[in-house]
Length: 342
Image 1 (spheres, helix red, strand yellow):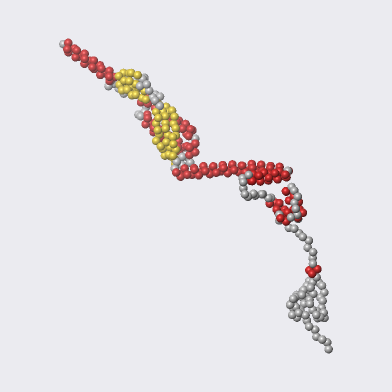
Image 2 (image 1 turned 45 degrees about the horizontal axis):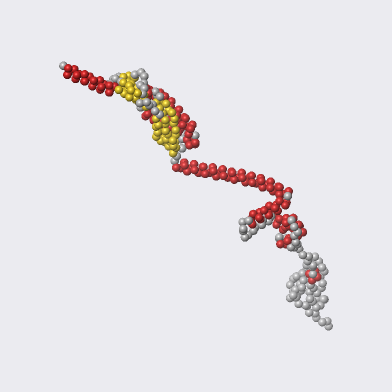
């Protein structure tokens, strides 16, 4: 009798041990427990630590309350300016109500993932390419609002959404590279033109100042010669004003000498104008032979009569001589013989 009692006590203890093992649950610090008793939600969410449930009657669902990082698969879309792009993102969310995450949605992770993909495709179609590349912060905020609106009813809070990468077609990449190169070239030309404008203004001021003091131009020329000679060159090039050369071509020797004297600042010999291109004029004495006309060599004055002087030359017809003006003698002309009188 005693033996049977001991066996019964041992069996009861074992049963209680098995019952306790099946009813005991441990909930971690970052988890919350939702108990369903016979399919009905029990009030109150079990906190972290040790807890007990009724075996075969209660069912405990543990919900992770940590922030979940979920990558959003890359989505192909067409932007508002008709550019085909491929965009992927990453979403950060957490469960704020464990009971709603269990009761209101079948799988809150899968639901958030699908909502993120559809919202990403929608935000691509509403944005321009420039916004996707340069104004991502605004797009991230809009995408977060689009996903967070339905997720609130699931007991899920969207913490942050980030567009991770934007893939462009190769043709669009080349076009953007050409556009960027052209823009840089435009800025370089504008800067160069601005520099030329400023330099021209400074040169105009310098020219105005030098025009008031002619010696400044000479000093500047000497400084240029010194700067060129400092390079140990074998050839020295001296600049000479082209306007001065043109003036010397048109000027008389006296004016040319005066101009060169003004430029050089010293006396100039009379040979300088001719060396610089000016023509020296010498007085020419007309000869007597040039003033007198040669008379025809004839033996008898009766056969050749002197023609009166006139402005236009007169032609004569003499035997053995061609037509020509009177006063000019030909070397081939022969004297006309005369016959003796009876």
